Length: 423
Ligand code: GTP
Image (cartoon, rainbow, N blue to C red; front, side, top):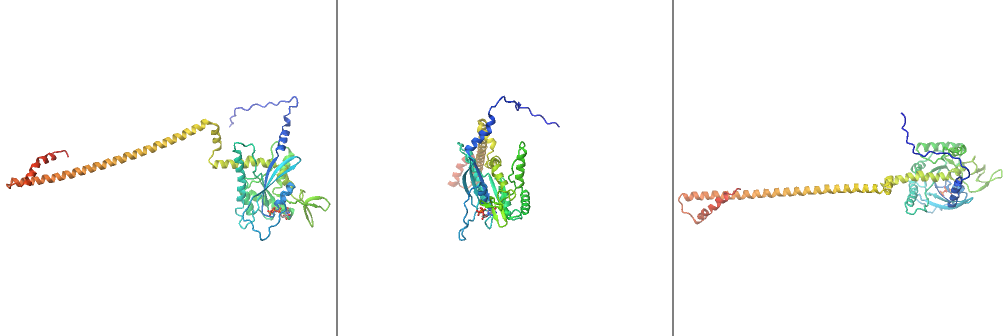
């Protein structure tokens, strides 16, 4: 069957050769200049059990001491019992480009006897950030919108060598459609290369089995081979097996590197043969930071917003339509008003019928009462008549009339009149 062709409403594109330099080729530079002036905002969240090296990795990623070294808690200190959320903000600058970086830490995650709901305060925090953004978007003046939404969540998996734990699966399942998940295998230097490869495979199959969506570096049709190859290489390293260290150590061949020194040698953080730190940094900062921000805004936040507004009973598109179309709004008001009138009319009809019924039954009752009284009177008169008849018979039989009997005879004419009445 042939598909009906759509009417061609698009303007035809005519390719023209320019006679000389016009200047719009400078647009990317204009955008670049503006972005540099405005600076960037990025919020990363770190989640994982205590001691997995979260603070160290953040310091290593941004090459700064965002997290000062922590003093271990004295044994007598009161331990927290819930997951808390702590943010650290820092303005960092590189080659004139300013970045306002916020790192959201989640101390306590997975540290309790019962960790069933460890994901909950984290989900609430992510959603409250969406809420705050939505509230700013709805303001009359929205020139200064601060974006506090979490753009990426580094989830630290303990290098157990087995597979994902229940708490890992539950967290990722609950959060994967609210935040860009980037799973990392913490302290990968505690496993051999083979163990790392096997563990990665198991983690990935668990993630696939539970239909968990983790952030993937996007590729576009018109991109060059090099970019596509880079994205594929990054994707092949997920979950990133990382090693963190903010210390400079000397390698056996005398190089000064960021790494961890062991009696048997040095693990270099920035060496791709030793760990996936470089690829993680590429994903999070060097190549895909803007993609992470965009995916958060266009997909994760947008889906959350639609769900939230629908949940509040706001049919998004129709409300916008009514806002800009007074005729549609008036039509809706008229329909509502008519429905209200019809309801009132039905109610009035019902009340009227009720009143008529009441009146009818009252009338019927008083009719019955009247009839009963009439019957009573008639019976009494009948009795009187038979008495008189009796008296008359006695008189006629010759007995002298007593004054009382005389009175009866006198009233007889009146009684005859009463008896002739129609009831
Ligand atoms: P909390 O703040 O308690 O949640 O811990 P954390 O996850 O931030 O861990 P932190 O960065 O404080 O590191 C804990 C310990 O692990 C420190 O002694 C670090 O030196 C060490 N460490 C950090 N990263 C690595 C790593 O990649 N490999 C190894 N072997 N040790 C690491």
